[in-house]
Amino acid sequence: MTTNVQPPVPASRLSDWERHTHQDKELVKGLGLTSATMLVMGSMIGSGIFIVSAEISREVASPALLIGAWLVTGFLTIVGALTYGELAAMMPRAGGQYVYLRESLGPLWGFLYGWTLFLVIQTGTIAAVGVAFGKFLGIFWPAISSSNWIVHIAKVPKFAVGPMLLGGMDVGLNTQNFVAMLVVIALSIINIFGVKTGALIQNVFTTAKVSALLGLILFGIFLGRNAQALAANFGANFWKNAGLGALHDVSGGSGASVLVSTLTVLAIAQVGSLFSADAWNNVTFTAGEVKNPSRNLPLSLALGTGVVIALYIGCNFIYLSALPLIGSPTGTTLLERGIQYAREDRVATAVMTQMFGSAGGALMAVAIMISGFGCCNGLILSGARVYYAMAKDGLFFRSVARLHPTYKTPAVSLMVQMVWTCVLCISGSYGQLLDYIIFAVLVFYVLTIVGLFVLRRTHPEAERPYKAVGYPILPAIYIVMALFIDIVLLRYKPQFTWPGLFIVLLGIPVYYIWRQRAQTTSV
Image (cartoon, rainbow, N blue to C red; front, side):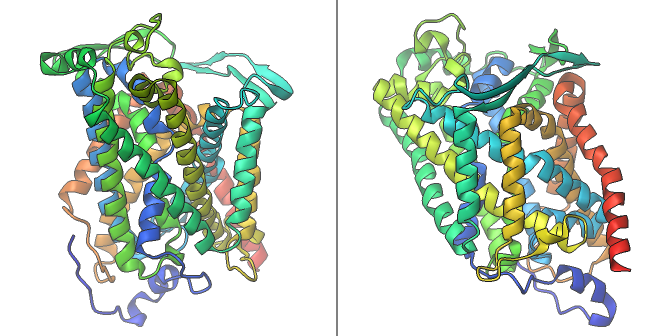
């Protein structure tokens, strides 16, 4: 990581730039390097790493390609984080990625990101992780279940819209999503009482779940290796179906099977692994509350993503050492079902059960609950800062720009986020919405990195305490790889892409309505 401090920019030349990108003075600087790094790690580690390897395994049918999918995700995540570090150091403002897009590509693009973040990316992720918390809590209290309805409103049947299959979801309040709502409400209220309070909770739970992942890896290395799994997954079998000329059977948007190449199936597999490694950018949302942001933001992004990706890849090697990758959905034992068909895709729970019996499965369930709780806290803490920044620009409800008079936190923004997240919990649609938006998330990452190239050209004299490692080669490689993944998903996973694109585009007329309203109010 290189540091290059530029001389101050003359106010006469860049007064507008300085006015829009200076540090927020009204927020409390309560996050140091440790808290910022914990926020990166805590926002990334949710329930995905414990589950999605089953779906990836069914798609790639190869131990080498399972690891390959996580390596591709790791490369994209770390390069993205190193690139964002330059933007974060340049513009240490609350709102993070929203500000970067606004300043590099224009306010419309910043709004579209904030709009999509509020509508589904952030709130949908919080809802899904909260429900995962309830799902694993149900292992200990069976009354907490998605089938134990408090109020069952309706079941939306599946229906086809072009190449997409939609619907198939229950709408109402059950004990599982009720627990999710309680978690969301409790953490939203707690985060009103100062960023230091939220950071303390984040630090405690992130330490616990990183320890859980590290423990899983260490147990796997010394106690969990299974001879049958090692024989099935390593040696010559490791490279099974991994050749560039191999064909892989995947399900298209209509449910029909299609044969795709190895590179294409790796791109398709990114839906699960990218989701599991997402939210690393959340620390940039809180930039206005980070101490010495020009140093701590780039460093926390690099440290946090590096540690989490290393843990993720290590966990997948442990999965392969404990269970065969190829399995049968009708198998009666953990080894027969394998990674591909672990019950309810709970791969980590199956691995711990294989190691230590039912006590191991229960221990992993507790670890996943801790992970989910901490992830929810990080997402709630950071997401509210984006809507606060949008409201300051007149592109969201004006009251959302108000801070708590005592704790100087965006209390109204936290409450608005909380209410919409609870609606998503009740709607039952959060799972589908998350799948739909993966495509859009990647689009915004690409646009933000394109914005870095734009700012290098339009503001060459701006202060850059940190410069992106490998610029321009690594950011350019990121753009090419991400665009390839998006194109593949458009072709082979239209149910994950076109709805997300529709949600983004729907924000265009909303933006002009908000802008007109802001102009009318200011007159």
